[in-house]
Length: 324
Picture 1 (tube, rainbow, N blue to C red):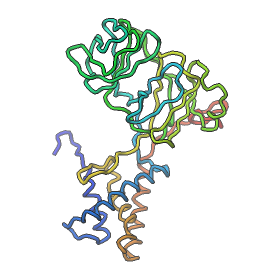
Picture 2 (picture 1 turned 45 degrees about the horizontal axis):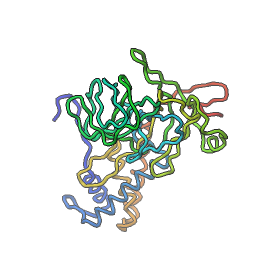
Picture 3 (picture 1 turned 90 degrees about the horizontal axis):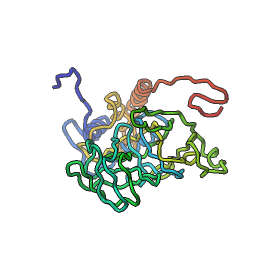
Picture 4 (picture 1 turned 135 degrees about the vertical axis):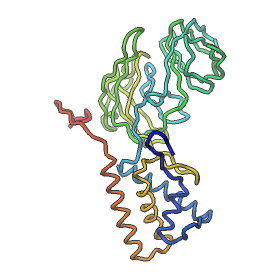
């Protein structure tokens, strides 16, 4: 029981699978499926949700993210293990060096190490005009030990940022803004940038021309996902703030909790039963009933789970800044 007046009622994977198999009369009340049956149902459940995502059904999480741009770099990989730095919009902390760190230094002293810990990814703005990315090995007081030494000097007052969790590969990036870092005592500024199609980006003849980023193209069809920006960033004073559609977490064990709103739990049970029905020789009348209820519940969830859209008009631009 909770004291806030709301309760968390998202059942585990086992409950969803057991419910689907009971609908098919494959198991009785109180019974549990065998290991083989459970594994097949688990794979079907993940495959079903992935298919929904690919077909445009809104079963993903949308969140603001941050990609730190390097001078001259136009291509950035998104996803765990990528050397390019991207995280959720509220997942990073910003600081400044209290003292100068010379080239070859493997330790830095920020004005405040609050929010930074061992294992974090950290970027240090070097005097050479680039950002050096490495990881934090240890934090002792205000001293951060780095996994790699600085390639050049970072003067006192130089900006540094850190984050603990890298961004999951987005399904889509529907919109982005150029994030101009705030000067000391100033305010950060975000300016919308225009999304490009694959053909538009391929047609750009001068992809590495330096300038201020005004357009971007996101390619989700690779293992990590790739963001292309144009023109090439001319300095390290900006980042790309963007909205990402994050895939839902996979169902991996019986104890997993569905990474979906509670309104989708019944949808999962009935649609998983429909997905598994051919393997369990479900009688036609029962399959027809399950299929009808599955479609009805999916339609209700889709109608509820819909993002409001603003309508923007401009010369040669559609709602999201796309030409049309």
